[in-house]
Length: 212
Length: 308
Image (cartoon, rainbow over all chains, first blue to last red):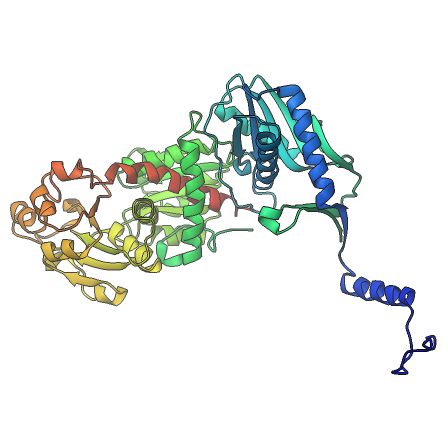
């Protein structure tokens, strides 16, 4: 401890800011000893990335006439809705087919682990001969996308399928699946988790890297 | 994580309210699946299910078989009529023989009450009770409640009357358990001889006047008179039963509201309900059949996910 500079009338010991920060860090370290989280993307960065992704989509799909954007449930739907909103509002695209695909019943780990609750599938159009873009928040092992590739067959035969992900965890793939459009590439080890938060669901736009 | 509290579906009595809502939520998703142009999902592709029916059935057997096939399970069918049961084989031996051929789940209908419970204690497979004597028929009650929920939005606080042969009906008992669990008000209506003693202990009221019961209810579930289970005469004649407990269009029109008519099938047209009622807009009989597949898919899916 260092004695307070003149003017500290209360006469207590003065703790300089740098030391305070150390103490603060130490105490948060104690609280989150088993789990720490780092912000990977802020709301501003997410916004910039979303606009870039929207432009990249437009580059390949122009007026989206023969295109269907499909959010992979549960968390890809938020990203898909956000992109459609940007495309319609800021780039004046009139109509975009947007669907939500649940892959629970198509997973390859049934009876091998956690039981996941199903989500709703909303596909009000056929994907026959359409250019389909799967949209998901994080591409990790690639198994969800494998399931989605099977699930989409129930709605017709698309002319092509592309993949857009906000976060691409590049060293964790179990299958030969790569994104066509990626927001940010992240090198995260298997113990770490990438969590994408959306304002409409979680109260903020942020991407966290959580390590155990 | 969301799973059932039980490993077998032996009766509604063994379920809790959460189980029922989980089954219904899952059935919603399967209902969407069976209305696609490709009505199949690959979920249960490494599960084998044996349908063992010691008693006749058309609807339930077909519905289970379709549900299993829509989930991509392998299915084997067994009817007691053409089997070694006739040669004196016991239930456990029969089922264990089937299980040694690597079967994971058994859907069983049996004329003896408690057959499913007995089996679940002695064999290693998930058991689904598809009707055991006059005891329970849980999937029928689930699909009945699911159909009410679909039609009226919710089952809680609804007034439901079950009309007919309550004494011999497993559908009635399972329905009473399911409806009470979800907070509905239940009355039973029928000839006194076909209403079990002490049924009030299940929390239901007895009403012997059909008109009064229909005026009270939102939903009327009409049951069949089960002549095959009747050892003595419980009422003087079918004609008299129809006059007192049969629903016809005239009776429905005399009510000041539109009630929902249900029937678990098979219908004896002109006995418990007339044709014009069965085929009317108020009847959701065919919706019940459609929902049966979705609800059974949900039950099989949720039970199969618990097989280790």
